[in-house]
Image 1 (cartoon, rainbow, N blue to C red):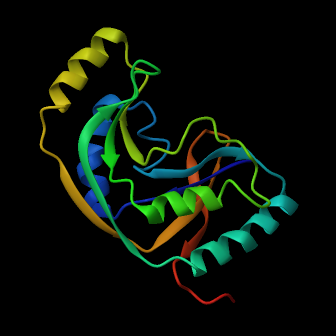
Image 2: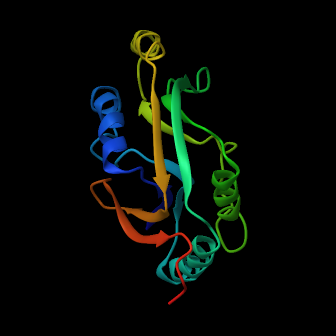
Length: 172
């Protein structure tokens, strides 16, 4: 099965971000707005059980933090993906780094850039128009983050939460 690890912002922040995504992101219906901590990877039940134990330890050792989302940016010329920049605080990098070590699959394709995708798979003309328009917007979102989520992909390609991990929570 295919899994990933993400942070979902609060509903008010998701609603704001979805106002852009519903028009420009073909994955809008597949997963809510999120920051990817660990990109998609394949794992069997035994491996996931081991990784869940690791994720509980990581969450237990992490304090809640504030996520600041601002500025429209792009990954061009690599891809025509447009995203909202998430300020790259140490806590985010520590989480992403922890999920590339130990028993976790070593599947990181690109360096970790904290972001929330708002547009992707655009033609060159669409990309130029959309990026030009969105880059003029003044976006300032702030959100308190106190958990991350292990998600998995269903047969219809929709991603759903497998388990959530609350920061600082005692191990059960």
